[in-house]
Image 1 (cartoon, rainbow, N blue to C red):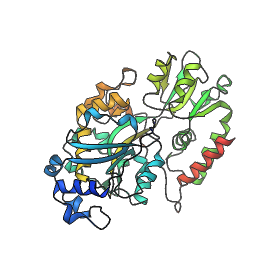
Image 2: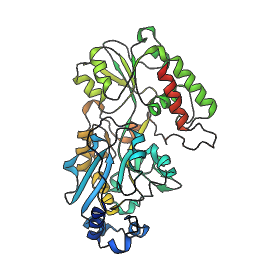
Image 3: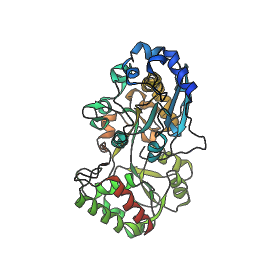
Image 4: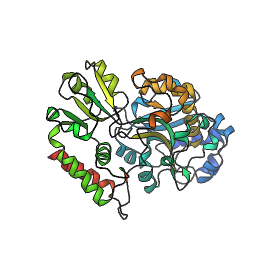
Length: 376
């Protein structure tokens, strides 16, 4: 998801040298692979085969958001340590120590930032038995590739929808509808510069809403600032549920995955959604270059793509599966016929610009503009 929806007080776990040696010893690779740092060499990754992946046991450390922690779907012969991230930026912080994690789950737009920091490596999908279970829309997507190489394996996906209380307001179909005096002070937005600015770039007519020229960026921020009187609050993900239930807000955007069903369950019975300015993201697995147990990473990823695993993680997270055979696990109010049909009105985004030397405005300027917007 563009930003994780849940948090936890559990600390993330760093394997000590003994754990590293145990992991490699199980594979018979410890003597050759260990460097002075205690981290496997590149030869370790090159030794991976389908047989070695199937046979691997031992510890596996992963960093991901809490809704995806579906223990009943995990391979039984791995010792899985799950650590939580609450924001996209935490991925950058918590993966700074080499060997802390074998894999991460984050939306595909983080590829460029992690590549710039030299944290992730290409994934050999020929080693994943369930790769062909992934719907072609995701398997063939350019947003998971850089330079023709796959850096992210799709796990779940979603789109940012506009959510509204049909007891209070008609369905907003255009940007002008959102400017109605009736909605002044009745709209909520998540505290997420990536999600909100991308959405307003769509409203502003940007050709590439994730990658904005200076002119497009300035137009987008101007439009966002002009919208401020309509906004009651900028909230954390999940807080919109109570805001809708109390009637404090009548419209919220962009919202994601379980917001609709949870808002209805909280008492706002007639919540509905539209695809106005909708765009999609894919939450993906990425393998870290300094992973201690890459075979376990591949095993976990492969298992997570299987139909039954996708059904379980869909029910638990309320996110959408990338395996279309698991569509029946989606809550009825959000269920669709196929990923192709669902994505027709919510194009996939590649991720924001990281480099500051090119023609597009880098993400750090997005963040600064967002801080200034919130302060107004």
